Structures are given as C-alpha cells and as structure tokens.
Length: 285
Image 1 (cartoon, rainbow, N blue to C red):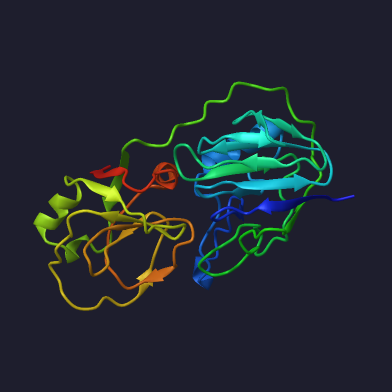
Image 2 (cartoon, rainbow, N blue to C red):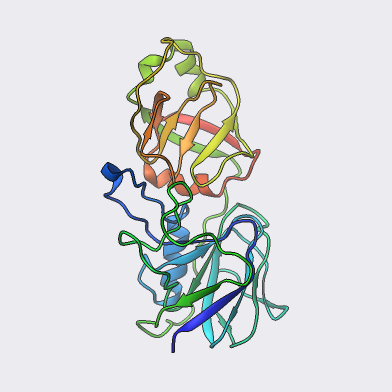
C-alpha cells in the first residue's frame, strides 16, 4: 500500500523538488529543482535515499503533514522548530513520525527554505524526467495546498544509523563570485566597477525565478533594446531600473535584458537561503 502524506498546513509556498530537469533549455524548459541542492542531498543521505530523491521545499513559514503510515523524515536546510503531535523533535536528523501524527515544520529561524525528506522520497508523477515544481512554466506538481495528499515511495534500503551532519548556516553576507557576462560591454566602466565594489542587499521581491537586489543602479553604455537571447542558471541580468537580478532555478530560458555576469552554480545554494536585507557583494572570480 502506498504511503500518503496529507497536507495539514501548506505554508507560504511548499513545492516538490528534486535535482530538476536539465537538458531541455532548447525546448524552453528551465532546470527547476531544489534551490539549496546540498541541503536536499544531505537530507536524503541521512535517510538512505538516492541523493536526488524528491523532497518538499518550504519557504519561510514551513508546513505540516500527516502520514497515513509510519514514516521517517528529516527536516533540514533553513533551521526551524520541528514537532510531532506538538512534541519537540530533532531538526537535521531522522525523526520517526507514527501514522496519523502531525509533523509540523515551523517557521525558519534563519534562512529561507527548509527541506522535508521522507524515507522512500516524494513520489509525485514525474514530468520530463523530474518531479520538480516549476513555478514559471507550470510543469510538475502544483504547489501544495491545505488538504492535498502527496504519495511517498517505497524505501530502497533501511534508514542508516544516525550520524552527526554538518548543515551550513544561512549567510550573514552573501558573497557571490562572478565571471563577466556576454553583455558586460553594454555597461560603462564606472558601472562595472560599481557592480563589483558596491554594497547591495537582497530585495524582498525575489522568488524561485530570481533573487532581486537593492542598491546602486548600473549605468548602461549602450541604449536601446536587446533581442531575446538564451539565459543560463546563475545569469545576472540587469533590467531597466539598473539593479542586478540573479537568475535561480525557475528562470526563463530567454531574456531581453543584458547579462552583466554569471554566478557559478556552486554559489547559488547560499543565495537560496539569503533573507531579505542580507548584504550582497559581487566579486570577480
């Protein structure tokens, strides 16, 4: 019998995520997948799941789930209080959740996104080889709603013995290494110096598509429109207001604003956990 999780509280935004669906950009399909991929992989490893098994990614306010059979879960990523039927439970380590009990993943006390992994993985229907929710294209399962039922897969192996796992903390300052982008010549020399020396902040208006920043605008050397061209994960695009936007996993595959730089993928996990107001520095890699 398939184990099912009933969503008691869906939170601000809870989505199913795995390693995403790379290789489809030529079809207009972005990668999607867990924004904090290292947190997803570690949560899965603690349960004996494959590293890319699907998990639930929460945003700021967590979620609450009720299994219809006994399950073992790990809550990791952004630190948060965890309870089972109101009793405190471990964060960042395997927790047994009896059938009918409520696993409550509380609001993040630091960072943005917590990850709920369950032994066996979340068994939502895959689309183009991935179970990930893509907010931009609408592919994959819709964000969770109260009362929705989510299937769980059969564990491939027993949950391994508990181990001490080093969970990285959310950044107090987001330092992003950058390489020059294909349209860096669309900006003045002064703007390029500002980009890699000025202090920016994480804007509250970001999402899974992109991290927006607040700070000094970048002045263009070239005016006019730029034809739409391909965008990659980690591209730093500059819209008309001059403030850099870092493209994350649900980014569009094409765009018409100039890309001043590109952030290497390993640096993006920290961006996923940077709360609004976090200082941001762009540094030449």
